[in-house]
Image 1 (cartoon, rainbow, N blue to C red):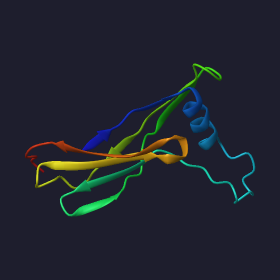
Image 2 (image 1 turned 90 degrees about the vertical axis):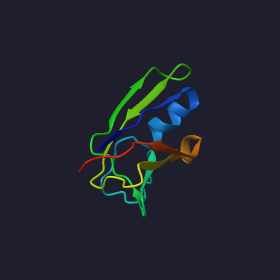
Image 3 (image 1 turned 60 degrees about the horizontal axis):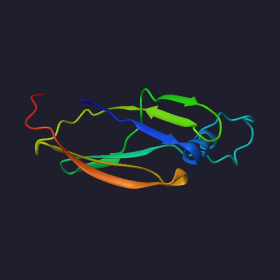
Length: 110
């Protein structure tokens, strides 16, 4: 099952997001600490941090009116027997504290 999320940050949060995810300028500098949208997926009794396989990201504007948008995709190999998936997404470094929601997906055939 594919899960797609979308995050749009504006103004100062967008500027911080752009800074947090910029490309490494010195590959030998291992002190660099970058952050990204963190997503945890829970299916039945399993839970873990998701790794996006196609993180499409765009930046527009400069300063006020700036926008940072990311639309990552996640692939789940395990289908829920309970009919629900729990998603937690957060990026505290840019001001988005973790938010949790439960998605009802119903019965799925494997």
